[in-house]
Length: 489
Image (cartoon, rainbow, N blue to C red; front, side):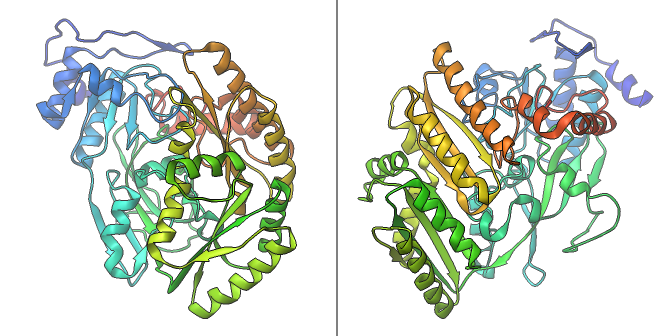
C-alpha cells in the first residue's frame, strides 16, 4: 500500500477538471483531480476515461423518474485487472465508485449521489464458459440476457430469468432480478452458482471459491447470496456463473380475460394450489390491456386479464391446458385462448415485456414512476384490490401488471417529473402501496431493488437490528464507503 501511495505522488497536481467536495455522515470523499484522471488513464488507457458531459449524463440516469446525477468521470475497463486497479486507486483516494451495466434499473441505482467515478462494464462482454453437460455457464457483466440465450441456443439450453428489459446479467445479479419466469424457475438468487467480485480495496473474491460450480454447498457463509441484491454497494461483479435449463419440448401461451381483478387473482391462486407447473402467469389490469392493444394492436378484451405460459411434453401441456381452462371458467373467464405458434407467442410476450413503453405512450410527455411490491399469495387479492382502488381514486393514469404467480406486482404512475406536486402525490401512492405489502408480511420491493427510492421502507422492513447488521457488513467490506454510496441505506 505504501508503494502504491508513492506512485500516486509521482504525478504533480494541476488545476482539476472537476472539483467537488462532498460529505456523507461526517466522512469526506476525495476529489476527482487531474492527477486522479491521469492515473486512471495509466490503468485503462487514454481512450478509457472520459469527463464529457454527454457521457457522464448518459451514465447518471436509468429508466426511473429519478433525476440524472452524473459522476465526475466514466471509466471503461476491458479486463478484471483494470477493474481491480481502478477500485484500488479510488479506495486510496476515497473517491466513490458507481458500477454501470445497461442502465435499465428503476430505482435510481446508478446515480452518482456523491460524484466520483462511474465504471462502465460493457466492454467486459464475454461468455467465458459453457458446460452443457453440467448445465452451467459463466458470463462477464457486459453480456445481456438476450445475448446469452442467443449464444447458447445450439446447446439446447437456456437461461430463463427474464425481467423484461434486455438487462446485463450481472446487473440482474446486483438487483436480484426475477421477472415472468420466476413462478417456475425462481429468481436470480436461486440461479447463481458463483460470483467473481472485485471488492473496494481491489481484491478479487470468488464467492463459492475459485472454480466453484457445485449445485449446492453447506461450506461456510453463503457469500454468493450476500452479493446478490447488493446493488453495487459491496463490490463490482465481474463474472457470474449461472444455472442453465433444457429448452422445453412444447410451449403454449394462453390469454384469459376476466370480469374482475378478484376473479383473475382467484384463478391464479387455485391454479397454483392444484400443483399445475406453470411457466408464467402474468396479470394485466384493464388499463394495461388497453395500452397494449393501442401500442401493439392486439385486439384483446379490455378487462383484467391473465397471460399464461405452460411448457413440458406435448401430452403434459395438453393436460395442463384442460385443467387451467376449467379453473378459469369456474371463476367467470369469458374465454380461454391458447397459442403454440412461436411468432404469435413472441408477439404476445413482447407486448407484456414492453408494458413500460406502452404505458408511457398513454400520456406523451410524462415519465413513468414505477414501483413494485411482493406479498404472500394468500394476501395478493387484498393488497392488489386495495392498491387498485387507491390508484383509481387518484389523479393519475396508473396501470398495474404483476408476476402474480409469486405474489409480485407493479404499478406505473404517469407523472410530470418537473411538477413537484405530482411527484409528491405519486410518491405517496407508492409509499402506501409498500406499506400495505409490509403490513401483511410482504416486501417493499420484489425485484426493482432499494436504490435511492425505498431507503426508508427498507428500515421498516428489515428492522433496527437488520439495518445495523447490514451496515456492519458494509463497513467490513467497504470501510471507506466508496461503493455506490447513497443507495440502500
